[in-house]
Length: 260
Image (cartoon, rainbow, N blue to C red; front, side, top):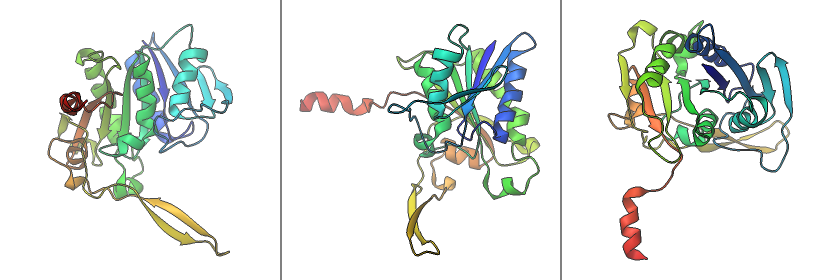
């Protein structure tokens, strides 16, 4: 198996090393693991692409490249340039430092990278490690992803549905913020919604008197509905959510057809 890894935390991020370990397990001794990741952190860029500017590409080692662009840019660079003659069988995006659940999935560059791969017909999985305050106190904040990542991905590869939709399906895995042996199990979940959990801005003034706005975000995962990624991950479950790029509000289409 040939596996491509990208992320949105950047080529030097610790979560990328975790993804590489998972990829090596999945690929096996006869497989290949390629890394094409952003040269700098790209958190929050969603499915952004560098449409109006070129991207600098640098080879750092064998099968390892840095791209001055977004995760989606990295996938495009891999599929159409770096690995054009030897395309990947699977794309892993992550492991992100922090969960990507509920509204976060709309902002996440980790999700954007996996989505771009799915749009090109390549199986893809986004992986995120719920971090929180506990994560800052641990010597290894990615221990749950390390312990359970390979088995969760392998189960998807063996039995999941991948092409039930024109855009293709990809999967969003979130690992909870608890000890590996305390994980309650794995649940299939929907993308959740958290009350009052959208981003807000907070103003601060610099020493020279200039005004700056910082983005702030309150998780409120417990406010999400039962069966959603945000709620179940916060309660100790590994969550797996099937996603797709089609944003059509299918349930409303019949009403729209009557209207027009």
